[in-house]
Amino acid sequence: MAGLEKKILAAFPAIREAKAVRRWPGGELVLRITMRNPVAALTCAAQTRLVDENGELYSAEASTSALVRVEAESLPKKTVGSETAAVIKELSGLSEALRPSQVYLGKKSMALALSDGSRVDWGGTDFTSEKIARLSSVLGKAPSFFAGPYRVDLRYFEDGRILLSKLNAARP
Image (cartoon, rainbow, N blue to C red; front, side, top):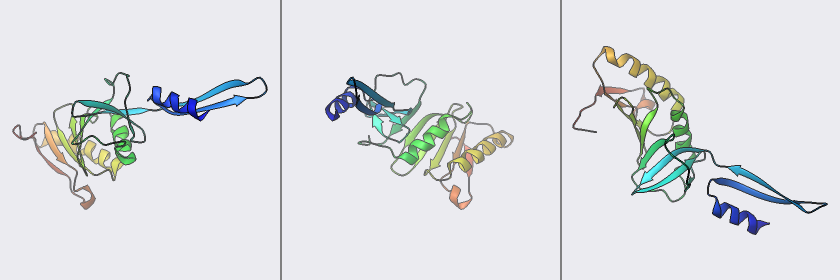
C-alpha cells in the first residue's frame, strides 16, 4: 500500500496525504485523501510554486489568480515557514483596502504592496493581529495628514513605533 500512496503523492502535488486501506471482507480498497489548501502563489526566478497553509511549497496546475502573489529573494527549497504562511493567510482574508496585492519575502522580513499603491514594511511574523489592527487605524487616519499612497513601516512595532510617510515615487 505504501507504494500506491507514494505514486499518488508524486502524481498529484496538491494532495497533502494519501492513505490506502484494504477493507476485509471483500478486499475493497479505500483511499483517504487530504488536499493542500493554497494560501499564496510564490514566484522567484521565473518559477511559480504554491504555498500551502503550513508554508510548504508545491507545484500545481491550478489557477493562481485568486491567490496573494508572493515574490522571494531566493526560492526556498521546501517551505517558507508556517509563521510566514499564517501571516499571508490572515492578510489574504482582509478587506480590499488592506489586502496586499503583492508580498515580498526577504530573509528575515516581509513587505507588502497594497492595491492603492501604498507600501508596508511588515517586518517579522510576530504580532500579526495587532499589526493588522494598527495598520487599519493608521491608514484610516492618514488622509487627514497627507494624500497617499503611503509608506508604512511596521518593523519597529515591537518598540511601539509605526512610521508613516508619503510614498516617494523614486523609491518603490
